Length: 359
Ligand code: MRU
Image (cartoon, rainbow, N blue to C red; front, top):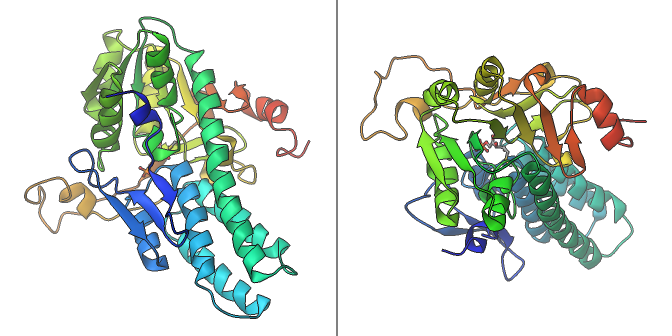
């Protein structure tokens, strides 16, 4: 398979008629490639909640397209009434998942378009919403490519890298963030090997990352999450790359549950850990990781989802947090489209993002 069929795969797009959003249903991968055409708010909410569309940037892009579509269904002549319904729907989509800041960030961008078109015609407002959603998507493509380039600059021939969850093209748009450097390495003949954590409990590593890397011809090996320590001890790993769902001002990074454990192990073995993500994932209003809301999901995902029969008794209690926070002290760098932020992160963020940091 040609590498571009992976790096340029379409996971989210506006329907051809402009009245729907089309997504690749990620819950069915790797065995089935099926697209869904979504037109109503409840199905859109469910698509985010159930991880049919997932990954911080992808849910932001999806939410923007969704609002552009839903706005067309609001048929009230009065601008105030339009706003009331628009903001209700926007809040509703925002309630689907709490941790990835891209969701609320992109919904806010779309809301600002509504506010800025108070005196415009309905047609102009709807056109502006669609244009904004397309701009959000295009910006993410450009950011992912830059992040991938910066990430590649950290790698050299012979390196082994552990990655966690999925931060490839499926989770973003084109190349991805944490996995983007691996595709560039493949394109440019840099000889690397990727160890892919399966990523319990929803198996984004096994189902999505190992699928994408294998299809693109990137050498990779799937491991269970609890094998990382051994692989590190054996000297097979020179770096850890993972994505991010929300980065606090001090450099604490929320990402898929298990990322923090991986970083603690890497610290013990002296292996550098990098989180890669677009600046849209930095929450400049969030002081530290303690302020990041952590999504908690159903126990069935642990006990039942990927088993032919439940593997624990129904009465067994489960705790299923979807994310954890990696302390900034464990990170060698945060790779963004503006460059690589190094510790101390508040200082490097001020240099890379002076306006956003209020300089
Ligand atoms: O629950 P998910 O699958 O949406 O979690 C995704 C992650 O944790 C990714 O690492 C993160 O969103 C970065 S995607 C570029």
